[in-house]
Amino acid sequence: MKLITAVVKPHKLEDVRAALETFGVTGMTVTEASGYGRQKGHTEVYRGAEYEVDLVPKVRLEVVVEDGDSTDVVDVIVKAAQTGKIGDGKVWVTPVESIVRVRTGELDGDAL
Image 1 (cartoon, rainbow, N blue to C red):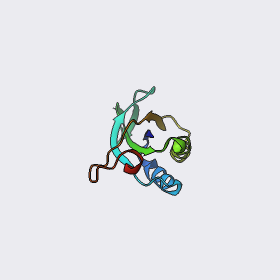
Image 2: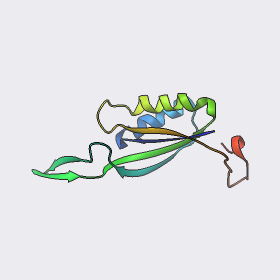
Image 3: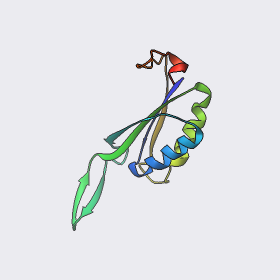
């Protein structure tokens, strides 16, 4: 099994969620996040005053999938989240050793 973690722009979350649902992913965890990459934040103008945004708002989503589906799920996320502009986000894949469903005690694949 693989844990796929993606950090994307907040306005792309619904597109990513819908694409994953269409692919067949049945569950995910979404958290709000803030951060920056190479650009180190950006400058915005509000009511004529310029100010620095050091930590850019993002959303972090996590899904656990079978090994064979991980490449396809990453492709689905990238295509749905991509705008072609700086700050689109990142996706990374981590191996999962074991999963336990708390309610039933089911293990690994049965817990998905």
